[in-house]
Image 1: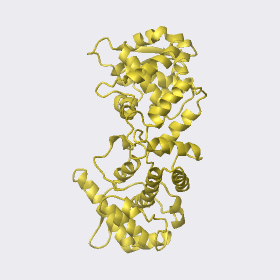
Image 2: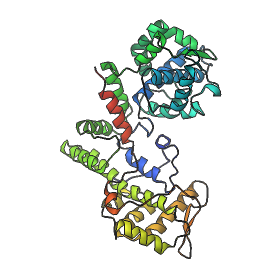
Image 3: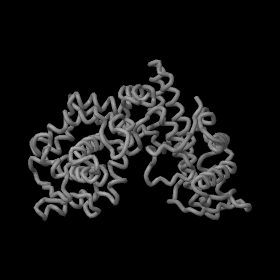
Image 4: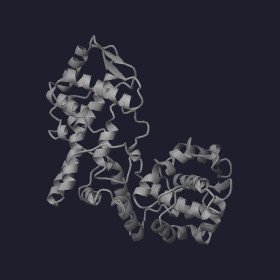
Length: 423
């Protein structure tokens, strides 16, 4: 199967990643035929629930078609975050640090916090772009949960789901159809009591781990299987079946676990899934050591190429036996197959030069910036961008080295959250 790279999928972006080799374009394109809707950060079922309920409430809070519902959503996102922290004990959601600090401070202020779309009340430096709207809307749209267009609104199916499942849970604290909450979301500023009360309890009930069968079926179809427009043609559903049948102790991929998944796919007659999983393993056998080595080289400014090669040979031996034979054919472009061949043959001088060339190409594609790494005519390393110091692992440790997610951890996390539901 040939691998074609087009524009970089914005849903694949890893925030904070420097990616001097452009590896993201490779691993995201390799992972997309298996997992078409999720991203590296959309690994929380509660995050999707918060988004769906918030978009529905914001739509109900809009007084007319000209009213922009974003502010109402931001207030809901803040309220849900406070409740998840105080009442549910959730960790790892967007804005946790500010939520925890403000909740602790609110203990001396009657347990009340202020919610609004104003910067001083936002739970992130830019809640619109860095929160759920910015990170979960596109994956939710790919999953058939959010309709095309702006502002973001739920599809009719998703809106009906929220109306049937979640709005009734809010009734005990906010009245029928959550009308009092809708009214509050129309305000410029909301005062919310973090103490135990019916309003807080009704919001917390949305995040109950005891999921109804309706919730399980809905989220499995849209998030696990990719929804009505599944771009993987059923491969994501079959991969999820295999991941459930062969669970791992970690959400992060490992070579041994994915080998078992690939073998399981073959036994089920799903050779397309097995081939793509093996392609993931082949690509990672090159991307991981190459990325690690590049980070290492960024800490060797002024070092002579011969010295770096000697150090590399001392750590990795004469060659890396862990490079998958499929890698040269699986990797795209001109540079990556050459990197794979140099790793497999132990041509470390050529490997370092090719990594520098690859970085120069990436910088040129990003607007003509100077390369971070260069091998001078005197065979010395010139480093223009210093990264955090990185050590080289021993060659026998490279076999299980894994750096990139291929969207697999997000799918595993969503599967685990649905699996905990008690229908």
